[in-house]
Amino acid sequence: MENSNHSTPTTTDIATLGGGCFWCIEPLFQDLKGVLRVESGYTGGKTINPTYKDICTGTTGHAEVIRIEFDPEQITYDEILEVFFTFHDPTTLNRQGNDVGTQYRSVIFYHAPEQKDAAEAFIAGPAKTMWDNPIVTQVDAATTYYPAESYHQNYYKNNPNQSYCAFVITPKILKFRKQYRDRLKEAV
Image (cartoon, rainbow, N blue to C red; front, top):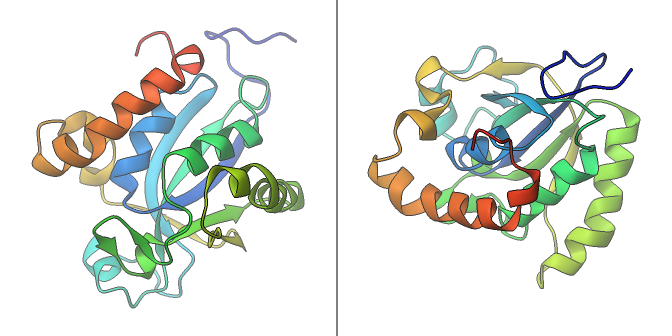
């Protein structure tokens, strides 16, 4: 069965990625063809039902992540990994820019052995050629995922003029849209 942009996919897949502040990477993936839904959340730690305040302490073990639901007939897991490794720094341990702490680590949470293999192969191959310094991205099995509070969802789209969004996220989005213009949803 062939899928168009307006039909419901017969199968979907999930990718869970941590690349610093979830506000910074959520809007990138929302704009990609084949991505059906992006949600900001927390995973990888021990604290049950963490709040943003808990996460900010850096003691929960959780990372800020985005959970991407996608149609694998329209976008591959490798294409998602390509965007992920292009638009965050996978060479800085527990840090993205001024955001510092384990909650901002570079991490891929795999949902199937195939995702683990794909992530490890991407890190050893394409990602390694994209960056001069060693890749420190962790590849871990997906654990319990907790959606972030509602005000974190679609944060950039709801707050584009907020100073962090304007100075940190907007330049990243402009670069992304230029580099990936052929892979963007038509409404962008």
